[in-house]
Image 1 (spheres, helix red, strand yellow):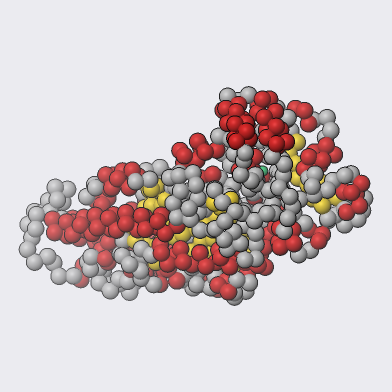
Image 2 (cartoon, rainbow over the protein chains, first blue to last red; image 1 turned 135 degrees about the horizontal axis):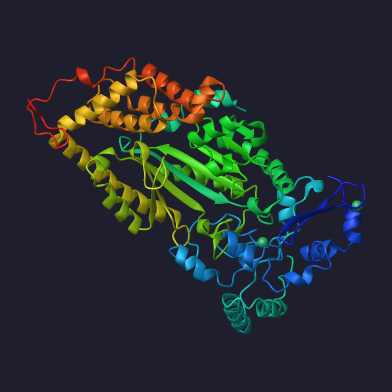
Length: 188
Length: 374
Ligand SMILES: [Zn+2]
Ligand SMILES: [Zn+2]
């Protein structure tokens, strides 16, 4: 696959939803560096790169920062966009699951690699699935949040309420605050 | 790998073998939904991403010990009719068959295991066994899942379990379902309370064929609805326990039919045989219902030398895509109806039929619908 900017072979693929439309950008190594698109920053920059003007429109709503799926899309189709969505839309999820299932906590089989403890951290995925460097998956997703300090729990409860009451602007602020207090887990 | 024609020519393992309660439970199926970490779900990814994912994972799936020398096909290589044949064989879902680019299915030689790639989830691993044997169907898919997870990073959360596109599959990602033939419960009008009771326990019941509440061929499917909060063996044990109860009810209803309504029963089975044996036009609905009666007759020894597996094979052969595959072309509905009758006529040629059986010793009182005027 060719880079969207130059003619080199692309190695970075980014998917983003813009105004409900799925868009993928393919970039080669050097162009991705030139655009500042790296694994750490991931989709946020991809979005900026694609449509710097349209960001504010969506910022009212809770969005999965791994795949760009929005809370309203979830509401509409009842399905998630990617595995990380379960983290992004965690607020209000328990209530939904309680109506759907026997419980809200998994008690069945666990992958060997998890071994009955916490899930493994993510960054290894690139090498384990992808054998050819040229066809890499979207950048790795943020690691699921570790155990939360109590003030974060309080914020989460507020966020829950905000989402329930569809105060998305408040929800976005609370979400940003939670993310600030709870920095991403170190990569290994 | 195996060719399509070879796959379809052979009856699946579950069609040949008899399992526990095969006279009532036709198949036990278990499927697991699995997804790769770091990839959007198929419904929310671009065609290019799905094709890319497929290219990476398909060799891994094909090289599993269970799937070696099996059948593997990219959907862009499969005609509509062939895909539909796979649906009728219960190897792929209707939803999956409707897709094309970026999708594939891998089936083992025995047609006991099928792995759909890029269904609603990245992987749907299905195991199918004859009779009431959810345990052994689960063992099949559990083993395949464990092998796959050593090569592929599945999306898993310690609280929520396996992460699936739809929250209704979250946790175990497991759907266990049993296909039941319940003609006596339908004939004795006891089916509705049974369905209600099963539904109350949190299991889903639906007709296998037909719309809404209609269950053509008296075929029903019962499956779990909850996937989170219980472990796999618990879910399976619960369904098996419920099914044991349904099987007992059907057995009782059959015994009652045989005892209290023998004439009506013989009449229904005799008519079914006669029409299937001599008709020239058969709609799908009519054929399913007649085959159901014939199967009941065979189970109750009312039809001479009629093997149950012959009837179960016919249940597949009369389906639209199987008919068209057999004819090697698309058929109009009228053509299908005549082709369907051609098949049942031919298959029943070697069967003695119910007429050759000794008449009932006494003349028991028939049901009100079939008064005995002797
Ligand atoms: Zn470039
Ligand atoms: Zn997502």
